[in-house]
Image (tube, rainbow, N blue to C red; front, side):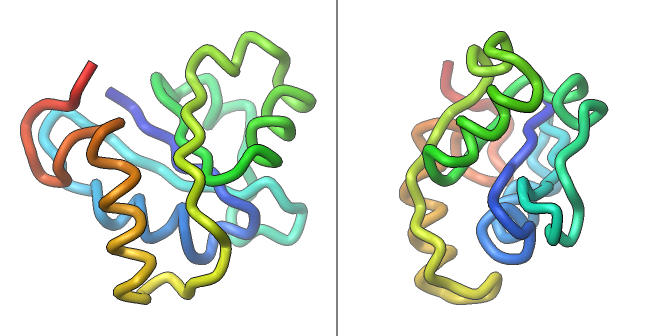
Length: 114
């Protein structure tokens, strides 16, 4: 499964989630941002590659829909993690783990929930 994590600037939430799930068997991960100032801006290639797209707020879903079309929303899951942390914050890692485990399974585990 190819998972794309999308936040605003691609410096905290999406980067931390990508690090967390990198190396999980059966899963390839990438991260990107919606802002023109993002460290790595989400592209059509990223969206086409992704089986599942995880966003962290409703604005990210709206951006993806507006930019890539309504069909993309079938692959989008919003896990609602606020943009108040830096990428290595223990609080961010805890919030990500709490919100992502139900969606993607345990990081490093061989299978994700349906």
